[in-house]
Each structure stands twice: as structure tokens, then as C-alpha cells.
Length: 329
Image (tube, rainbow, N blue to C red; front, side, top):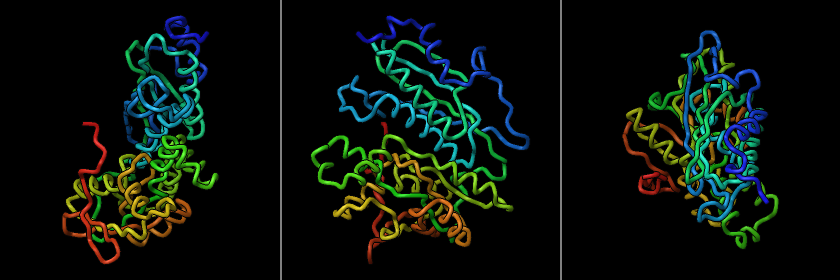
């Protein structure tokens, strides 16, 4: 019989979760941090809910992840927000709400996944809270820092900038489709199928790009954000914040290799949850950035004076569709 949270109790649960946290900073009413000299604090919070952001079978949604996957992916999403701001992590806090009948092993698995992701990217859990709820949910707050002159904002795009993406778009959506439709997934090469599922379950926040940007002698002017809500959403929001427009070149966007090119392009633009970076910067810096970011990084468009955002598909210019963007409400 599975041990549940009701069987365990809050104090024993906290004791079980302690090994997944920072040993020196856990135990008091709050953690005390000092950002590196000359850097500013950067903070981001995400709320993740069972049945909306992930599925462990507790809600009426097909299971797509293990608890360890949920933990990894939840933290990776937050770290991606730091990367999008040009910041590196200092630590994180976790607010856990769960039903009393939730198995303790599920919660331990989630924390194991968060701890593994944190270790991979040089950070750890430094605090949090637990409470009873009807639905399993996590509220993760990551704390990071960056020199003021190297923080990336959305409103810094300028006419003449090129648009760079750091990797394939649509792969997370393809991975989700594999999990939801195994019969379709069975028609794909095994290596491709597993790669897409890995992208969906264990995304990779692009802190490597932040490290490289910090090595540049002169801080480059960069506008950007991550593509957690899709490439189209990222470009539209950057352009809106900067008061400019953009043209995306469909043939340059790195997509998953589907025979249905239109489907692959739709997933790239609107699928979301790829957690790559979308950056607008001067054209002379872009090739070096692409080389650092990897084989699938690419220059996919340019910033233009008109305030419309269009997709250039062969000889056609098509407006991006805000109605297809993911919104919670």
C-alpha cells in the first residue's frame, strides 16, 4: 500500500524532502542570499498545475510524465526565464500544494527531478512551503543575478536587427504528440521519437548562451525572451514592447523533420514549450552566437520599421495569427 501525505504528515514530509535542498540554507524561516558584487537581482515565478502543465494521472488527462520528469521540467521552465533575461541562478524556492491522498513517492520524485536539474545548472532549492490542496501544484520562484548592463529586455529591439533562435522549434510539441498518440509515434524512427519526447519531458534551459554573452568584452544590446509560449508569441511580444515589426523567414526556421512541412511550421510557431531563446541583435554578432548555441541555431528573420509581424513563406507575406497563441484565459 502506498504511503500518502495524510499517512506521512507535514513534518515527516519536510524531513523527507530536505535531502533534495541546499543543506546550509534550509532550516530557518527564510534563506539569506547576497548577489555577486556589481550584479542585480533577477526574480521569476511560475505556477504549475496538475492537468494543465503536466499530467501524473491525478486529473482526467493522459499521463505524459513521471514525477521526476515533472520536477526537472518545472525547474527548467523557470531557469529558461532567467536565461531569457541574461541572468544566472542563485537559488530557488518551491511552494507545494497537494491532496492528502497524494503518494509520498510522487512528491519525492518531483523534488528528485528538481534537484537533478538544479545540480545540472548550478543551483539548488533554498526554501519553500507546503500546504493541503485539492489539486497538485507547484509554485517555483527562481532567484538569479546579472550585471545591469547585460540584462536582456524585450523592449531593446531596433530596426535592422536580425532574429536568432537557439535551436529547433516544435520539438516539444512533437514529443507531446508522441506521448498522446502512440500509434502515430510508432510510425517514426525510434531515435527521432525518443529525442522529441526527451525535449518535452526534460527541456534544456539555454544558460550556456548566457555564459557566452557574459564573456563578450562590450555588452551587446540584445532584446529577447524564451519561446515557452511559441516562437510566434515571442516575436510578437518583443515587437510590441519595442514598437517595431518583424519578418520571419519560414524556410530558415529550424523545425522538426516531418513530411508535412506545414504541420512542422505550425508547431514551430505556435506549439510552445521548447524553452529556446529568441534574440534580436546586431547582424555582425549573430553568426558567432549561432556557432556557440549549436547546430540548430539560426538567423530566422529581421526587425523592420512597420509594426506588423509577418511570415515570409516563399513569395507570400502572411501575418502571424495571435488567435493561435496559447493563453490561460
